[in-house]
Image 1 (cartoon, rainbow, N blue to C red):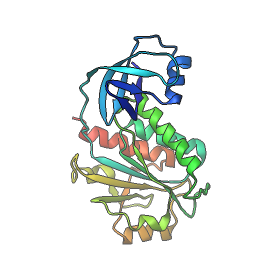
Image 2 (tube, one colour; image 1 turned 180 degrees about the vertical axis):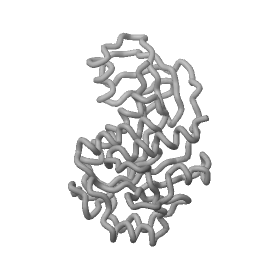
Image 3 (tube, rainbow, N blue to C red; image 1 turned 90 degrees about the vertical axis):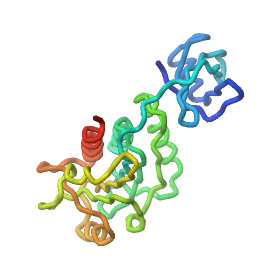
Image 4 (cartoon, rainbow, N blue to C red; image 1 turned 30 degrees about the horizontal axis):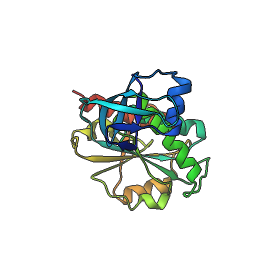
Length: 237
């Protein structure tokens, strides 16, 4: 069943955005009284379509049960990478349950994006919304504004980790037993060429613990998927 996130509600009617209305009418080609899932204020509802013009409105039928979050609030700090890779990271991390994503400019980022680039943020939020609907989430991951590297030094979380390619670092798995589902954990992932030695040293000096994702060197677009998969495996029992 198709799921839509809705921000507007009038009594027992949910009002879809123009873009989602277009999707209902022209892409899905739904009919009157077809049922859809609506997420409003992180609550899931069953609703039926009552009109087929823009904006589409759906009448509430009932509230639905949801699966509670069973993994910690994972924050991925992702160094900026090329557009297709960034899109992939956002989509897949969302599907795997990431709580928050923070893009960051680093010295080795091939792509440099101004922190006030609103068009890029709007596009990324659209990707996250669509991935949340597809994966049946009841929330959309928080997407922060683009940070500069020095901004990372000020972040305050219970668990702060940097994915390192150096030897003799803690393995990701060995750190997970220290956390529960109410904790917020941040993982910092470098760009295609990795962090510079200066950047990595600065993060460690400011409380980030270097960890290894295993004996193989992963591409930057693979790292967040590995982290999220390992955390889901550890906590989804």
